[in-house]
Image 1 (cartoon, rainbow, N blue to C red):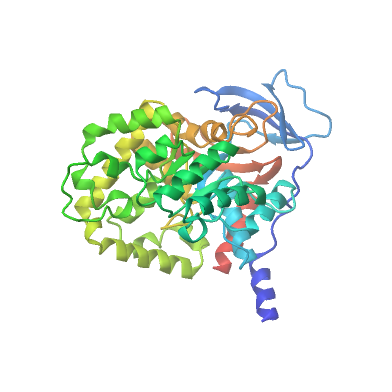
Image 2: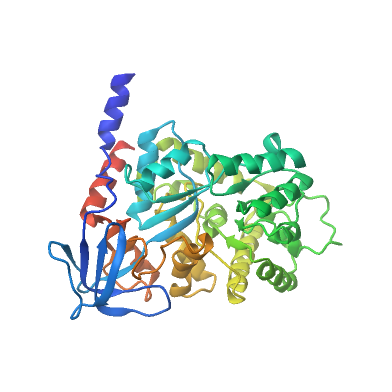
Length: 450
């Protein structure tokens, strides 16, 4: 067994040097997409030292410290790294697989992950990455799923919040608890300043979550149910997967009210459009697992995704017409929430349902554009807005001095076409430069192991 494990690790290769910074680095003559507003600063030099952006200045006037490593930025664009605001990092059972998934995020320019997996091992993992001992995106770690077993009564829910806060989690992940326990949890969390987000439990209404100022609603959970007028006869049908069982009863005229309530509450939405759209797609599971990025996932994971899609397409509440309506309604919700400036952050729920870590963000941003947002507006949800979610101490999401040096160097302008976000020349995470050649070499090792 030890020999097998050793061979497995060797096949995957060791992670690149995880040190936090390569010293002083200067991106010379680059076009900067700072994401503080919609504009491009042409022919700039950006200096990075000790994991932070030191200066951004016109190339003709910039002062580059002696001995700095220079990266040619001519004809290239530099934008902030992206955030995956609903990601999952594997647990400690398979460290090589976990480290591969961390690298897949980075390989696609995802330098921050709000990790919703809820595993106790992730507390130490978060800190190891922050110290530069392991290469990976900066993690913000959610608690284990708040279940009825742990928090099924008001008293247990209050204690769970206090316990998870004391353990060092960054967020309470909402799962399945009764309404009275949910309300007690929310009151306690708000009282001690502990964010809570994720699902809205069955029996808890959208209005309850918004009234309790749930920090984030992920997957647009319970919005469809809110759009169904209370007097509607649903013929005893369950609401189904994110409201798919009731979507035919939804009244779009209620959307402005849902949006107004969301804005008033200040609650964030992480839509994860791809979670539903991949399942609703008419594309066969076999065609989906033949996509190029699937070669980086273990066979057992791909088989699980294919099985799940087959099961969903067989559900009575997820037939083509209901699935199409659900996709259209979710896109309209995103468009209308954004139009009224309800806070939205980018997330795809990887690795779930054909969402390969990192790669899935590119699917998500195209779906958000299809919902009616411009390239700049979409990218803002994964950069500046994601940082705003975490508050003033986030220090990422824009290219200005003092921010964390999480950057993507591109060969084309991302504001002109979102596909250009995939045209990388390299990624920087906390000042550590990963040229595209190094990224591709590691990806090949991961593919070979799978």
